[in-house]
Amino acid sequence: MRLLLRCFVARVAHTPVPCRRMGATGMTPDKLVSYWQKVFHKYGIPEAKDSSRILVAHALGAKTFYGIGSRAARSPVSADQLLFVEKMAQQRLKRVPVQYIIGEWDFLDMTLEMRPPVLIPRPETEELVGLVISDCEGLRHSSETTILEVGCGSGAVSLALLRKFPQMRVIAIDKSEAAVSLTKDNAERLGLRHRIHILQHDILTDPVERLQDLGAVSALVSNPPYIFTEDMTQLEPEILRYEDHSALDGGLDGMDVMKGILRLAPLLLKAGGDVFLEGDPRHPEMVVKWLEDHPGGRLQLLQVVEDFCGRPRFIHLQSCS
Image (cartoon, rainbow, N blue to C red; front, top):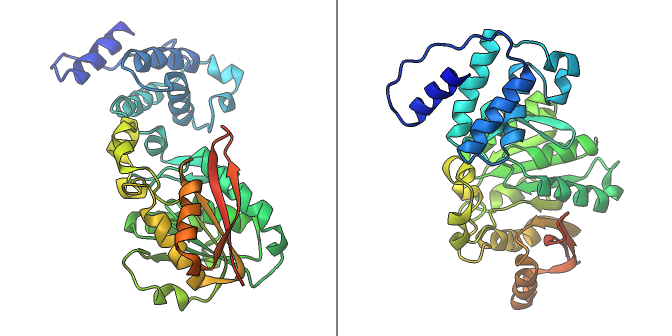
């Protein structure tokens, strides 16, 4: 163990120190988690215990560390498994998010493929999906229901809604080619490709007619870039180094794309259609002010919903008839 740590420190410091593979004899998953947790903690890696558990579980073919089983957690790992964990741990020490390292992540009841630099879905966005589901319950069995997602990223929101509403159709758009490609792959992975139209489209620069030609939609949902530009430098290295900044930076007031959505929605929604937005806690008041300044936008605020931390996070609007 000391030799392995010495070799690791040498790699971090870029100092050429001889290093030979450590034998796996006696190294159990429990001990491996404990070891890497200490290393991660020493080098300032956030959530050191969770990171080590996720990587060890992945190396052993389990989704969670508890999924390994108590007996297996006390059984020696193989030399190949030990090496695989070390390889992944080296990436984590460079602050690569664990989602990118293991190549997948769970969102609600789905396991999605993850690839950099596509935005990793957050727990708050699971709440956004829950809000859409609860408020669109009446559309569950309608074969004429179409939802548009602006900024689909990995496809998490669109695919979760398709799984919940078996008669629904979704149009998922993103300006990023990488995001469009990943959404397509995740749709195929979940057997939902036939019910989703995925399009590379930038609502701020591309003609709205491309979307209008697809027909009116019942609801528009989006987790747009909403971080204030001045706040971007405060983000963790995992985000700043590896995730797509254009999917995070919402401009000076965090509302560049959100304003585009507010202008776009009346042109695409059916009468009485809904808009569901995730934003910064400062945005609800800003959206109310925007609506007051644009009375011809034919949108009205229905509710502002707090996230699990009690912050005003989700904005629900409706098109006026």
